[in-house]
Image (cartoon, rainbow, N blue to C red):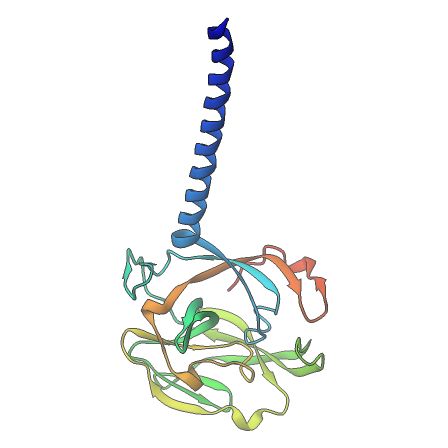
Length: 235
């Protein structure tokens, strides 16, 4: 009789052990994926409008530009370096606790300048042309911000940028030579972006990855879901 009682008890114990093992493995896999493969981010500011809106939730690939070894400024297994025109996520050089997302304008060795809002890289004008008007609601003040929507062809990366009304006198910068081992980044909302024009280049070791697509498009300014932006690929 004693043996008959021990058998189901042993089976129950084995079942719990297997479930705990499965849970531990699931946790380990999630940690590895988050650390080295893919991570979720939320856009907190309007510096990348109209490409990214405040409240957009992104999934980003972390392995594209190499894997950073935790707690040290060293990378390994780098497939390639960031290219001009790509959108990247990086540690803010002045505060590593914050992650920023911007567009790469120049790479190491380039000379970057901005004249009347138009970017010049190594003396070559980046093609840009207006396409119409654009408005958005500022998430902090609630005010409507208006400006000119333009298309920019940054070395084959065609994307939208925004010039805000009233900031015409602030669209000049440089020339500036980007140091080797760094990138020069700018926001697509050109007149409302805290970027390399103000605090300098981003070391390559600080680049964490590249955003892939928007998996949850929450419009923080208007408190609603942007249904048409679900799974929007970021370019």
